[in-house]
Image 1 (tube, rainbow, N blue to C red):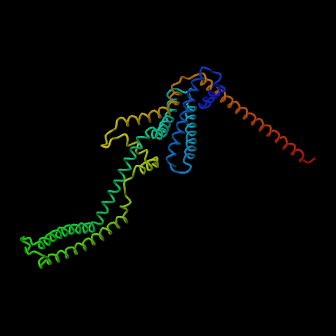
Image 2 (image 1 turned 90 degrees about the vertical axis):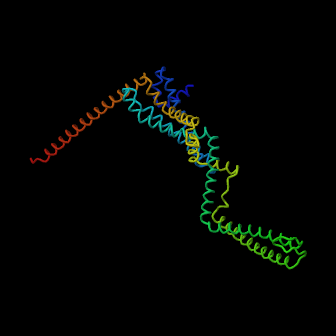
Image 3 (image 1 turned 60 degrees about the horizontal axis):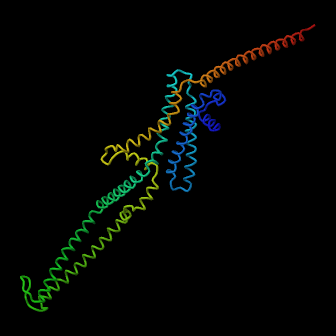
Length: 364
């Protein structure tokens, strides 16, 4: 326990030898140090998780995420440690608040940065489901856009194909009608359009010749339709329409797994709102409260330092600083006196030497 206590004292950036003299203050600084440590720990988890998605799919993504998370956590830990240790408890309350204000703003910013990746992990299931829907809608919109562009670009060719198909329908109807007339002529049935003569006579042969022409024309139409469809299919292949298809379940899962930080972050933001733009109160407050929790947690060491009364350790620090300042002043005065005396001695010795030289140079 002594080692744990000393570790958290070190995290709170106190002078351990001085703090050890005041047992009543031990637990307070253990709490401040633990808060600073766990803030850095959560920052490491957050940074590592965020970078994992940046390098998702890379060979060493886990290694990169671990190294960056460790570096980010140490940076936040060191910053929090400095923020708390730099608040002067011997100043007035207003001055302490002024000292802490920029540090609180910085802590809020750090809290927001730390909270976001952890929010992404908390709402991972919801984000995955929303990403599936988003990717499908995006794919549908892409396919619709391609189809509209294709129909606009090749409108004349598509109309030609439609006209050929309509002509095919009319030709097939005419062939069926003519085939019926051939049958009626052959069996000698009398109608307004048949002769009523039994057997395969001149009238039946005439109808058969007409039928052959219609079938030949239909074959020509079918060939033209086939050529036009092949041309349009070739154009679709060229324009990329044949490659645009809705993602299957496995493909969606793969796309979701490879989704980057930006997509996940945007999806998390969209979870706050319904499709009609209204606020989804459940998700909205859940996401915001998690962020506020981390912001408060990041600001907590500063708040604890501000709210705590000036204790014996703070007074001892003030006294020690005063003594150090006084000693520094005395050392400065002593150094100045020594320099002055040395300079006076140097001047006196230089004068004596000059006088002796002048005496030696005088003639007898």
